[in-house]
Each structure stands twice: as C-alpha cells, then as structure tokens.
Length: 202
Image (cartoon, rainbow, N blue to C red; front, top):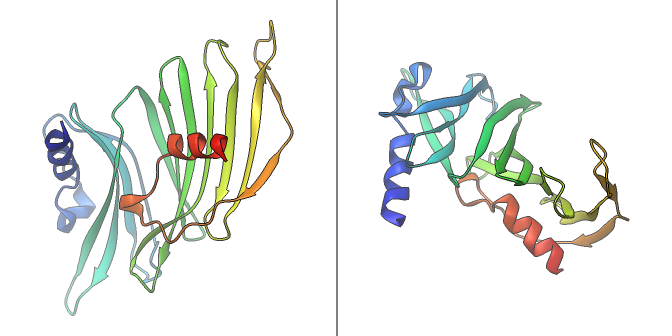
C-alpha cells in the first residue's frame, strides 16, 4: 500500500520544466490551480491540487532562475485519498492558502497557509485551521486554529443542538494553549486530523 502511495506521488509531481502546460498523469484530474509569485523573484510560481485513482496531492512549483531560462522546483504534499470536495487555492500577499473538505458523514474542513522561507528556499506551513463535524448532525464537533510561528492555538468544542438545522452546533468557550514546533515544510507538514486529535488531548 505504501508503495502505491509513493508511486502516486511521483505520478502527481509531473514534469516541473513544463509547468506552464501542466500535463496530468493517466487518469489524473486537476481540481484547482493558482499562479502567483510566492518566492518574490518576479516570476509566477504555480500551485495546484490534483488526483487520480491512486493518490491526491498539493504540488507547488517554485521558479528557479538560471542564466538563460527559468526552471521549476516541485514541492509535493501527499494528501489522503478519501471522500473529498475539490480543494480551493489562493495566493494573498505571498501566502498560499489551501482549503480542503474531506470525509463522509463525518467531515473535516481545513485551511492551511504556507509561506516561502527564503533562508531554506522552500514553502513553510505557518498556520492551520481545522474543524471536524457531522454532516448528518449525529455527533458533537471540535475545531482548532494553530499559528505555527508563535505556537498560539485556540480550540473549542461544537456542541450539537437538538433539532437544529443550519445552526446545528453551539460553540463552547475558547481554550488557549501553546503548541510549539520547529519549521514544518510543505512536504512533511502535519494533516488537519492530527491537529484535531492532539489538540483534544492537550
């Protein structure tokens, strides 16, 4: 199973040199793509989410200037291949915002923010928000917001309100704590479910 996931990763990280004309692997589907200058060199970088039957990934292609041309260096975050809604990407003031919704009747909505780290020349996770909830109003929920730069974390429980429709949850009081961690680079960054589980245990 692990071998299949790694094969999928390689399939999804297609030729970075041909970044302007992304070619998907067999059976691959592009969910979303955004272009913008992430590393501040004046050349548009590319971020996109794509999947095939074996895997799903967020790929960032960072421009690298050479004497006569520009190449692209890929950074790939392999995503869990479960039920999902097509992702959303945006670049705002040099920050890449990646919004995702996964899961079945129990869903996880998440937002991850990445910023280019010039000293290490790669994308760094700087913030994450995650919420787990029931699409069928079957159980309570939980949410966490984490600033990885200073460790500030805010959590709160979502308590199911009996008979509620759109307002299915009451928000409990906020709980604030510190979750300090070293730099998390895009390819190895933690997933939202890990944040939720660990925040509930803290």
